[in-house]
Image (cartoon, one colour):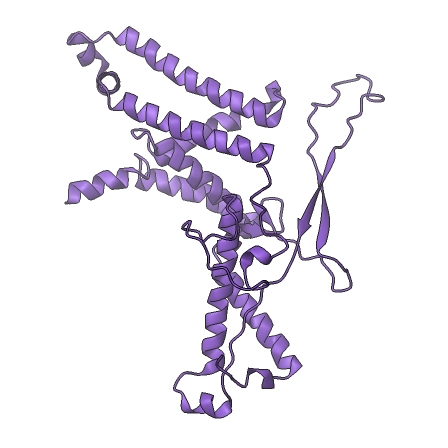
Length: 333
């Protein structure tokens, strides 16, 4: 073990150095870009724990949104009130630490590397890297006994493994219903993409493209345009039905008010931004706009202005979608 004069720091210096180190780690961590304390934050960051509170468990109460449409006009409101639904979740917390130590002041003096600056940078990167690793392992339901690439971690004495943390995922616990639903949705999305890609690159897909480019010309060479329209409508309705079934499964209810004009506009925007002429276009557009809106939550009152301005700029610069950049790149070769 290399020794340093790190312990010679006073308690005040240790506190200030530790805060600076944590700020450095939080800035470098990728997962912190999705954390926040507002209602639009994908991952809520809780900072209300107090030093005087004992234990390693915290119970957080979640309040569900109201679902009914209320009472219209002069209809009776009494006895028709909606009960608020709340749920509780328990989180476990623990600490993970690391340190560097050098032999003494002279060892630091003789070296061209400034120990404290180098140590702060190295520890900041270490903390950021471990935060990201634990986040992605947890999101992937992979135990902390493995690296993010799937390789097994070296087993060290108790207290020196990520799997020793109180909140480490238990691989023996069966996946929750929401996790199973997510896996099923991901599998359906992948399968739908493969099927659509095969259709687009088949004879039927080429006929539909000819119909899109010039319907009169396609009809003049013997293409049955009416049949193609029916087939295209049937295929799109089939996949729309799958999406609707998934929506009802996760929301457990469906009302006419659940679908507004804004939803239709957003669906079209997803396709335009990603690229209408590409199978992966709507998926890419959905990822960009959905996560882009969440990332812009830090702009607060300027969120909508920046979001709408960015979309307008994208449509002006890339009228055929973001994926059209690939065609321009290939054309430039």
